[in-house]
Length: 83
Image 1 (tube, rainbow, N blue to C red):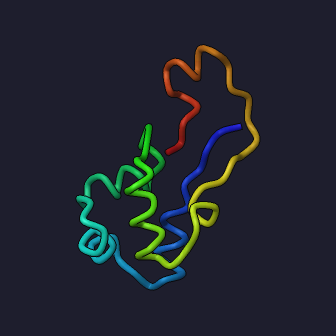
Image 2: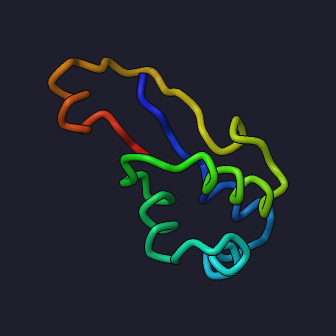
Image 3: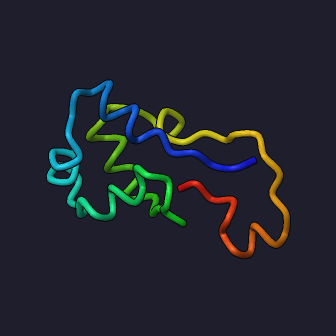
């Protein structure tokens, strides 16, 4: 399984821009963009909590598992991480 972030979908559903979310949660647009595009390797719980609060959602609305094989090599390199 791999982890997917659905920040783009949540922003569309909430009719909110990345800039507006950045201002509400105090996270740079660049870092939110990395998260949105699936290139993030980690997220702090405090950041996740702030994003969920601003978008009025739960972590389960933002994060999901998708089918896929994770090998030890891909886990070590981070190739399997989408967010």
